[in-house]
Amino acid sequence: MLQTLTIIIPCYNEELLIEKTYQRVNNVLEKLANYESNIIFINDGSKDKTAEKLNVIANQNSNVKVIHFSRNFGHQAAVTAGINNTETDLAIIIDADLQDPPELFGEMLDLYNSSNCNAIYCVRKTRKGETLFKKITAKYFYKLMDKLSEVPIPLDTGDFRLIDKNIINEFKKLGEKNKFVRGLISWIGFVQIPFYYERDLRLEGETKYPLKKMIRFALNGIMYFSKKPLKLAIQIGFFSTIIALALLIYILYGYFFSNKAVAGWASTLTIVIFFGGIQLLTIGLVAQYIANIFDEVKGRPDYIIAHKVNF
Ligand code: UDP
Ligand code: MG
Image 1 (cartoon, rainbow, N blue to C red):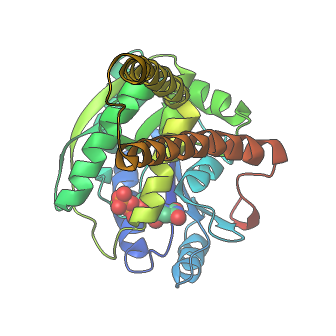
Image 2: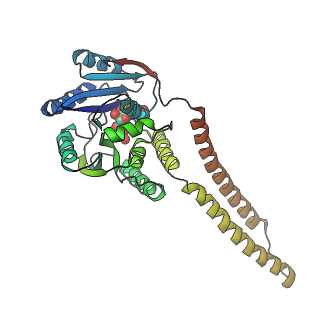
Image 3: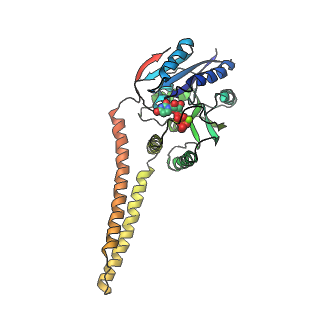
């Protein structure tokens, strides 16, 4: 029996390129004769014509399925919905903007078949046409992630990857709401190997990750995979207590044994403001973890499906 292959494509306001994306992915799939393949598009609450265009494609092609969300729930929720709604042997997650070339599917599948593994994560050798700002922030985000995270999360990998049934089944059992997909897949384990490739330019439209979303995404990734920031708060507290004690000894010494007591409200104020700042910062940090617990405890679903097509 043929193995089944599902391509998972999250889409948010991608009307400019969704047809092209379908064409290119489908061309590649038609050449993969050894697989029974289908495509799941997740329409993540797009406000443009993405929904209509996806429905047209699905009506003409029975191997295309569409999941429409009730509103925008975010890229990670969309990928999660794709994984949760497939019963397949193999799945490949890919962005709708074709920065990750679908022409690589063949090579990825060959690598999967020739090396006893359960997942292939695609590592970017280069990032063509991305702004210097994006390149730098991405570089430091991945470095920081690597330092902080309690599970190894490979550098310079996005969600572009191939996963097999073992990983898919375990992923479906994960209970957390705010899923950082690439971290969780790495956390699941089994045998996962890298595949190096060149990342292209976005074909049309603009990035759906403005700075605000990027920061939220990065913070989520770090907080859900690391308790180290909390330890940092303790370390800063410990360090500043020692400094304060040393200062106290110095001040008392000055007061009792020399005539000139340490003068000036400027230094006092500086210290007060400095430590006020550190305290607020660390409280804020702790509060952020509590907010995450709050979100998890409420137990709301990661996404709501309005309707499905061709399922
Ligand atoms: N995306 C989504 N929901 C969102 C934002 C993005 O489904 O809220 C999709 C988007 O359509 C694309 C993928 O996630 O297929 C990656 O987004 P984008 O290419 O804009 O990110 P970048 O490559 O700039 O980091
Ligand atoms: Mg992109």
